Length: 78
Image (cartoon, rainbow, N blue to C red):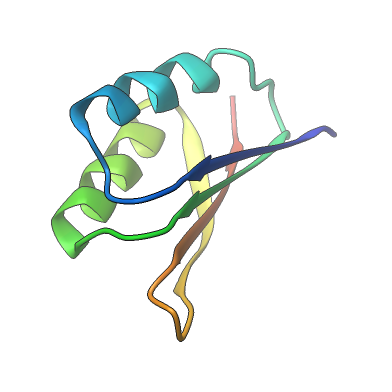
């Protein structure tokens, strides 16, 4: 099982969605994928979670720290 990390510094921009989608292509079954987003709003987080689910990922954890950073931990199911 491999682990992949993607950090998005600053707010989520349109190009970040494309980068996330491209990054998902490298991840195999049972691999762990963590996305850290420095600054975002709930709407962007919901879109990213939907992208993961639509691409056969299960979300293990969705958390926000005291500095406002979001952490999404997921793994590819299929």
